[in-house]
Length: 155
Picture 1 (cartoon, rainbow, N blue to C red):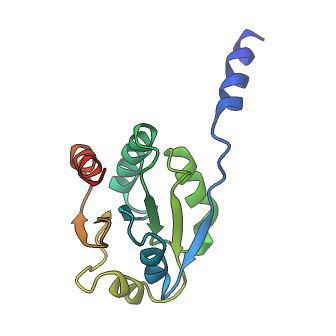
Picture 2: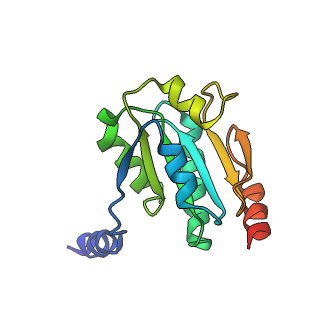
């Protein structure tokens, strides 16, 4: 019984945010850019098949705790068929408040090309956007200090 008294409050205090997972179709990139017009944001591409992506998502989840105003857009390069597992990872890594997308069944190379003509699919892949929609691409796991520096610069 004593053990249950510790488990139940922890479960009750867990996040009640239910992330939404939109389908990333041709034109979705432009939709996202338009939504954040004049606002800085971070767009992160990831996959269930990318162990470093899980490390990065966990770091971003912790960062969101100290920077709740961070505009974070997550785009999974997996399939809509993986929706349940994707949502589980998003919840588990603390990024449930982020805007979340999953590639459609359309050609992934076509979707990547729409985002960045020189991106060949390496993951994780991130884009820092400033308020004027200028972007900086980063391949590989983001460095937490670099993200925090960017956050200070955009404030």
